[in-house]
Image (cartoon, rainbow, N blue to C red; front, side, top):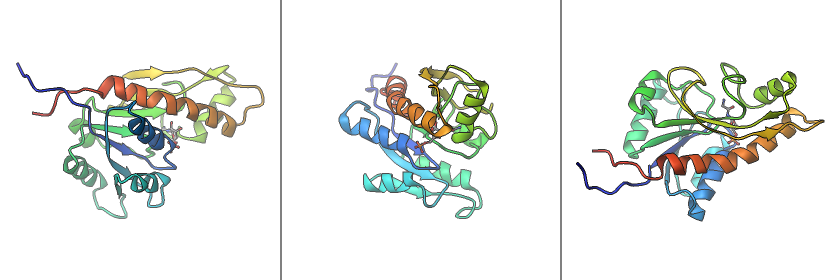
Length: 202
Ligand code: GAR
């Protein structure tokens, strides 16, 4: 039995690129829609927009890669512990998550993918590559999938998916923009529902 109050999870966002999903999460927290604070942002690209967005909002922002650290995963783990992170949020993180990190945060690493899984997932399927594959398949709809991350690439437990129509004349870029808008609406809701109140770590 424990009588301690459940608290919103402290989030770290790992992002390799522009960070529009990160921005949507920051905005949701500032509006009061997402109770979980974003306490740390990590990127494996020094010039990632995600890092400047984080810095702009006073969030600890770190560049970690093989160029900065002989063992980037160990450094990431160290930062996660230093900032007392409960949940790791992948938002356009285009690098492998090492098994040691998955084991340390089992059930507490979440990823967003810009298309249905497993059909449009797997190695090499990120960003515009995904939208090109969706258009090549000639499907009528696509849309983001949010799932827990485990050792099986893009195959962890699904948490949510919303449908986004493919419109006639779509290019990978127009489709990407429509899907991104859906991602921005979906991610904070899933994080709020899953991790808005968690048991504090003993
Ligand atoms: C998003 O569309 C996200 O779903 C995708 O990268 C983009 C990042 O955009 N992730 C993957 O493709 C992972 N396989 P953002 O930097 O503007 O948030």
